[in-house]
Length: 417
Image (cartoon, rainbow, N blue to C red; front, side, top):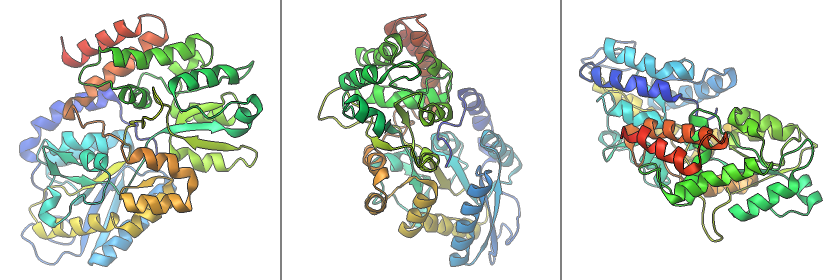
């Protein structure tokens, strides 16, 4: 699974208007392989995703094939680059050629569901019982469940065990401990801490645990709680504990800095574990993102993709697609996917099984249990707030504005006033 913050704010905002304009055409699909719109025996269905990486495409293809076999259909999988998925969905909605099974990055679901292009899953006996609350929220729009994610991700604190031990530093649990640890670990050629603070949704994604854990809220960005969270990042940069280059780093860049020994701690996701495990000399650990005060649990954003069933004149095709979706979300397949992609199974009980076999996933699973969907508060208006947040981060970390000034501007950007 790739980084869940792959979508650009500009793409999402620009496409919303198109989604709404296409709503009248989004409820039908033309005749496709396996069955006509009037029904009949369904022998094949189509699936669309953005798993273009060869290994990921093959892994998902194998699972789609296996699930198709269990329900008696052949699944024809097509993958397009992540940035192309939503434009392709819009084009298909317009031409009434939507696939039978559609994967979406979870923040995109509400905007697609708003058009009427997706079928509610309750009509097929599918619900989110046993799933973590944030995962059910990520797959819902206006109280109805439209998508489910077999596995998900979030972020945590990844640290170099040897560096912390050498400096006599305990794994930080609070913001004060984080600042002290980062300062102690910083030395020539090495920073104590690293984050992705770039001007994209990734920068917003990485800041959300600090904003939310301090009681901040994207509905009202110009609050003391939000300013305190941003001030923490400003203090880390201004003290020299964090490189000013974080303004341009991606999550992949942060990982590279960590592996090269140029930072002792970083915020990143479980998708980095395979690369970390390749270096036998690198001894690393994972802990929850530090929180403002002891006793708190971090509130982190939920990443991952949801599978949905687009509307289709052939109810028989929709039924088969829903059965494949249910198969993808079975406990056994969740475990398989979690092992392959280093992610967290969406069912809480299955996540516990996964952690027992993979202790390095414990902090991620713990955070997923209380993680929040990025669209849970603002729904389709989330991209505006996300843009305001990463713009505020840039302004504050460059010293152009104070955190309070930057977030006040962000609130104006998000609300238009």
